[in-house]
Every structure is written in C-alpha cells, then in structure tokens.
Amino acid sequence: MSSRSFRPTLVPTIVTLILLPIFIRLGFWQLDRADQKRELQTNYSQRAGMPSFALEPRVGARDELEYRRVFVKGRFDTGRQILIDNKIHKGKVGYYVITPLKMVGSDQYVLINRGWVPAGLSRSELPDIAVTDTHVTIHGVLVKARRDVFMISDENRDTHGWPARMQWLDVEQFERETGYRVYPFAILMDSDALHGYTREWGNAKMDPDKNTSYAMQWFSFAALLVIIFIVVNFKRESDSQNA
Image (cartoon, rainbow, N blue to C red; front, top):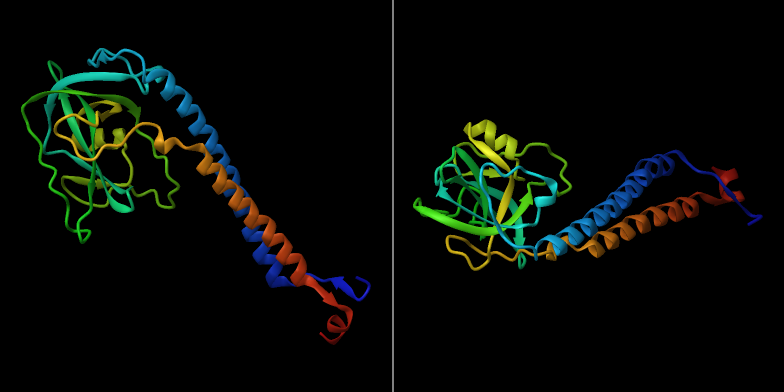
C-alpha cells in the first residue's frame, strides 16, 4: 500500500453520500415490514380460527376484531365500486374489486373485497364487475384497509366517475366522495362464496422472510457501494502526482 494513497474525488464522494443512506434506509424499512408481517401472522393465526359473528352497525371497530370471521347481511351498491390497481396474480396484472354493501336495517356500509380480476388490454378498458343488487349474506374475514406498498406518489384515484380506479383502499376518501357512512374495516369474501372472483386470501401475502431477504439485498448494495468507493479512490502515487 506504500505506493498507493486514498484520495477521494468529488463525483464518487457525492454519489456515495447520496446512495448510501438510501440503501440503508430501504434495508431498515424492509426489516420493519418483516416485523409487521410477523405480528400480522400471529394475529391471523389466533383469530381466524375463532367462531364467526354477525357484523352489525352497533359492532365497534376494535383492533382485536381484525382477522375475525364474520357474516353480514345487506345489499350491494353496484354504482359505487372500486378497482384497486396493480394487483398481481400468477404473474398477471389486475384489480381487486371492492363493492360497498349496505347493511340491513341501517344506513351504514361495509366494503367487500370480492377478489381479483385481470386487467384489460389497455388502461381505458375496465373489467365488467356487475353484481346482484338483491339482499345477500356475505361471509368472510375482517381486515383493516392498509396502504401497505412502497409508493412514491400520494395520488390515490386516477379515474373520474365509477367504478373508481385507486392505488389503495382509503375508507375515509370513499366516505368523502360518496357521503356514505362506512365501517372502518373491509371484508375479504370467502373463496367459495357467490358473487366473487379469484380469491386466494390467507396469510400467503404476509411472508416476512421475503422482506428480510429484500433487506439483506439493500444492505449488500450499501456494502458494495462502500467497497467500490474505496477501491476507486485508492490511487497510485505516480498517478496522483501526474494528475
């Protein structure tokens, strides 16, 4: 090493100072997501096996009710449906179909996730999501509406009119746009129930190991960036003098 010296130059230093904290932050963000999913897995396992109960307007939205099995009676509102964009099923892009259900004997609604449908050939081609407007009984699992993806934009709705195409399910936004009073949790409709589409729920999408793997990748990028920075900026003394 006597013939070499560490002489960092401006451009590599700036690039490293910008990218290094980003890589590290993304790594810790993925670890945090893994911890959240482990907690969700535990709650799901404990609550999904508990007896089903009737969801009625008088039932408060308590955290401990998430992942409980419920049934609710009501009528679908076919004119105010939501398509949750960019949902992948077996490598294909599509939507989750969210349909509001007006509870029997009440002016309160609950949002029902009726499953996944494939997207059309173009963005302007929306799927046919017609559904019965007769009284039905829906069985499923209560879930909180989460914005659980890493998004740069805060813009949620990207269409006018109905069905609304949204990036995530925002109950408060839906209430503002419709004037409806909506139960804070949504329902994942049972996979064998009528009036639905492709439904593969369960805890398959709560795999924390995938997030841990992503975190290790980001930390590896950070370590590789530091190594490259050091190697690039170790110069021969003769080269430094000539420069």
